[in-house]
Image (cartoon, rainbow over all chains, first blue to last red; front, top):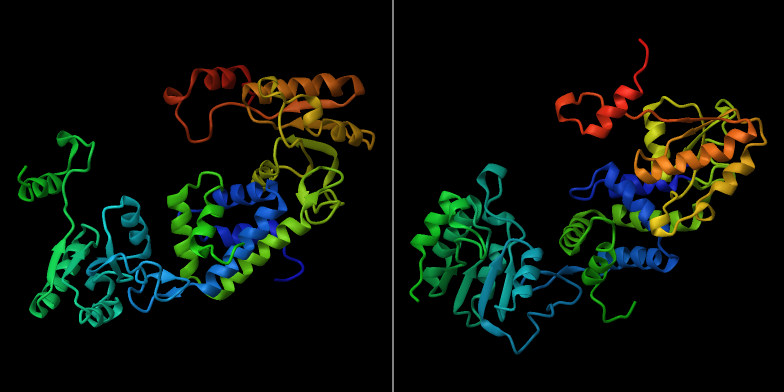
Amino acid sequence: MSNQTDPIAELINLLAVLPGVGRKTATRFVYFILKQDAEYVKDLAAALVELKEQVGFCAHCCDLTRESPCRICGDERRDHQTICVVQSPQDVLAIEATGEFRGLYHVLHGILSPLEGKGPDDIKLAELLARLSNGVEEVIVATNPSVEGEATALYIKKLLVPLGVKVSRIASGLPMGSHLEFADKVTLGRSIADRRVL
Amino acid sequence: MSNQTDPIAELINLLAVLPGVGRKTATRFVYFILKQDAEYVKDLAAALVELKEQVGFCAHCCDLTRESPCRICGDERRDHQTICVVQSPQDVLAIEATGEFRGLYHVLHGILSPLEGKGPDDIKLAELLARLSNGVEEVIVATNPSVEGEATALYIKKLLVPLGVKVSRIASGLPMGSHLEFADKVTLGRSIADRRVL
């Protein structure tokens, strides 16, 4: 960094590229950070450096992690016969927060999207196939319920069913606490088609 | 930082305290940062450290700056007879961006607010008074057009008029491009009361 650069302007420029953050929000961040004690700023700078230096892919699930195998893949108490396939590391956190899943994950780091030129070789599908030899019984495809997410799920099904692996898909339907009258047609239709016996 | 701390969780915790940022947004930031090149992360960490180490108050206007006097106070081409009083350093940036003001600033770092226990000694009023000996002719009070902002403007007027300084207030009225029918009553009333001759 040049000695001439104003540190306030410099930090605003760097923060303004964060997702959903423009120059106004970045400016708010900078003046907020200026009000914090030196400890906070030191920790923040250190955590950034540490993040980039220490975090990489887990050799098994491709999640971003400091150690490989990651905490989840290395946990013997988890169900190693079930793998939940997700698009991104954030999705692992989201599912873990539910406490409903005790199996392993596989992070695709993307989704099949012909429009964006993303094919099977651009996401971590080969890595998923390589894991199936270790007695995996079920693969739950938890890609987003979007056009690309559904297509990716079908692609994975075609790939894995011939190998004798059960492939399932997370349920789509009305969110808890929502109202039928405000639901979109596709969601409501899906919730009727996928009804379960009580 | 303990060696046991996960750098992702650590950085999420630190970013989640930024204004308007919760855990979800902080998580998005972290995964965005993970995708950036090492250069960006190094610059960001360095800018943070530099910010805290180098930025302090300007001895004249109390703005946050790396050098004192700050770039504005040290600029001989600016009008040193006119001081624009603002609540926060962000307001200086906002007014500078208009290109309409060529005088100096004074940053109060707050506003009179009896409800929050903020009195004249809690904002940089003494520092403003100390600057008036240097031939200042006009003080423009650019605090926000809120109850506290108006009260602070009146307080400053009472303080400065006996010293022979002209005190003015930024105009309130309808924002450019807005519609009368949607304006609130107070703003519309003010725009009529403060009408100017064409």
